[in-house]
Amino acid sequence: MTEHASSLVNGKQLDLSVSSLNSLASAPNTGKKFFDPYGWMGMSEKEPIDILRVVLDDPALNELVRPAASELTIHRRILHHMVCNIILPRTEKFDYITFLDMFVMYCLITRTPMNLGHLMLNHMKAATEKKKQGLPYGMFFTHMFHVFEVEMTGEVQEKPKDSKEYNKKTLRLMGFVQNDDGEWVKKGVVTPKKGGSDSEDEEEADTERTPRGNRTPLGSKHPFLLLHC
View 1 (tube, rainbow, N blue to C red):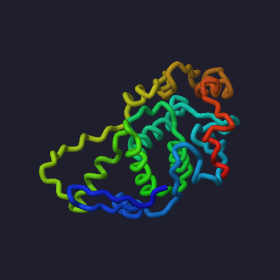
View 2 (view 1 turned 45 degrees about the vertical axis):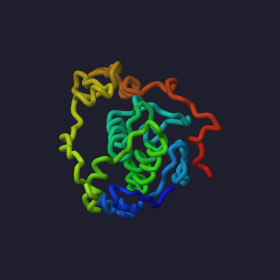
View 3 (view 1 turned 60 degrees about the horizontal axis):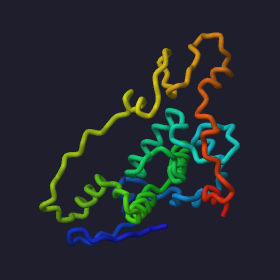
């Protein structure tokens, strides 16, 4: 895992570290350090199944799987969307939850402190190693260049677009619809109306997440199981 990086930008040498990135982001230079897109390194004190249960909001889960984003509850789906666009921005599709997404979501849900600067630095390094990956944190870099007084003469300045809010349109694009009771449920899932004769057990069955048969089981040799090391 990377702790330092340097770059020459318009004749200005920039030496970045985890602590300097945290300072620029107004984040504490503390918290858990982890970055392994293909395994559980850095979270070795937790069982993989426990992390999955939290992320999927499914305490009864007893099988290690690689979940799809469509399996998430509405609140978890929004959180995953935020992780993919803000904390670990990337240009690829968000259909599946990466191992790193899971770590970050687990920390956010359980309020486990994580080191943002460490995540950012390693995410930037990983992006430069991929041919088709767009470089992340564009607006953050603009802020950083101003702080370090990098010469920007001749650069075309673009006004940032208005921030997008999560609204009904966003939820519909994520595959959720509003039922007769005003609740947001997954498209195609029918829920009984409140006050009906259906029992609570039947209601839970109707609102169950994507069937586990659609999930991808993880074999014993899958890097998903590298937690115990």
